[in-house]
Image (cartoon, one colour):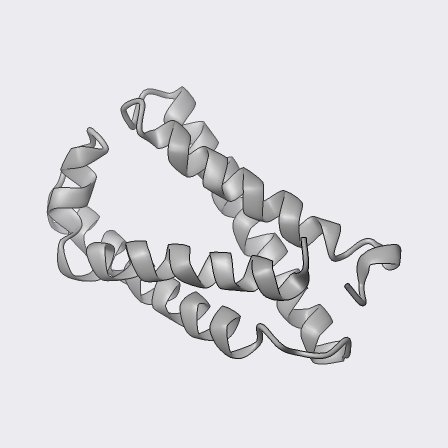
Length: 126
């Protein structure tokens, strides 16, 4: 997969979930089988804002040439997705989300592997 393609896929995912978490957090969290309250609303909306930031980062940097800035962006997204993968997996395994939570785990696994691939020296310029 090319860097540009991965960045576009990431942007589309962020576009899909960012507005839902920012404007309709209760409905999304209920769909995932988790409880919803003021703390969850606050956290979900902050996460929605983070996804909007990642949306703009991935969309605007999708054509970045191989340089220090592109490598920093890849590192950022790799670390972000790897931590989110671990956190989501822990929540999923503890029963905090219903079966739909596995889809979120899969998405973070995909992006962790995808951005990790571009950190390998032989794949930097792809």
